[in-house]
Image 1 (cartoon, rainbow, N blue to C red):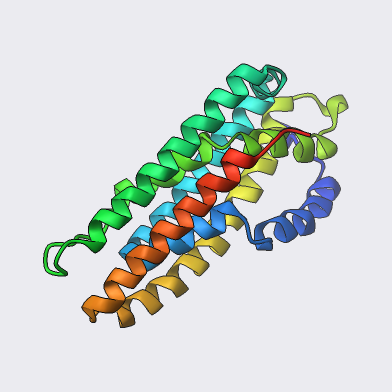
Image 2 (cartoon, rainbow, N blue to C red):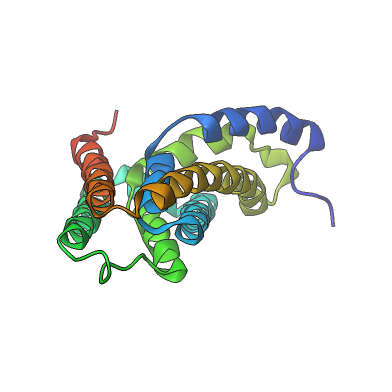
Length: 210
């Protein structure tokens, strides 16, 4: 079976994907917030969830469904406001944790952090638009296997994103671990995490398609 992507095209895609992954954005902020709040395992799981959600978007784009969502404002906005509501819910959960005694406040389990990362990405229509605008520039219709080409490029972005977002989350987790021994700092970390999620919700709420 012929590899769906031309190797030279893939080589040209790699630096573009790396630049994308290194650009601070909602995914990096989310991984940072999970690391601060819940430690290294949650940070890695959140980064994996973000990448998994991104791969779903890439698969849908390859099947043509992403273009349908982007072309229908009502459906697009429904996804966007679902994402806003979910991020606000996450912010509220962080605020509730700050009111608990340190002994009863619990960190997120890895599978929940993974779920949160995936859902935040899946309900962010900006990812749909980005996927439709960026990846097709490297697609070669003459080679066929359009979906396979989308998935290869998406996997490159996803793996790079997991490594970089995971590293950011781990760094934040190290800071949080040192600070969390203090009740005051633990509550501050909860407020910071809530602020991150609220900021992401606001950015998504204000987002308008060009």
